[in-house]
Image (cartoon, rainbow, N blue to C red):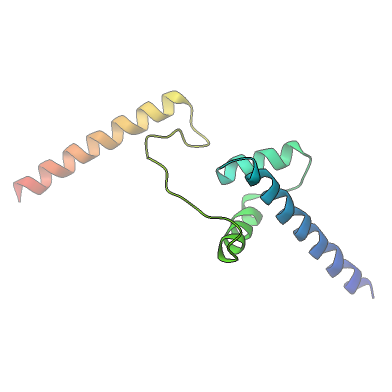
Length: 104
């Protein structure tokens, strides 16, 4: 009986989390990291290991979609300085790759 109650509680927590994720996304697009932060601000207990499988299930069920963003967009964990550094490094890498490809 206790095991059944614990299973029911776990399923309810899972359902509440799924509803909260869909509610946040109904307000606009968000990175997974943004979702986690917004849910934590609402005092929900959530970690990356929980959110990514949940997002995949919701995508497979047709409840949400993923879309690509330009690599020039600021990523969830980046500051503007991080973005500039990343873009400069990527540009340098592309230039190096072009040089290597052209010399062969």
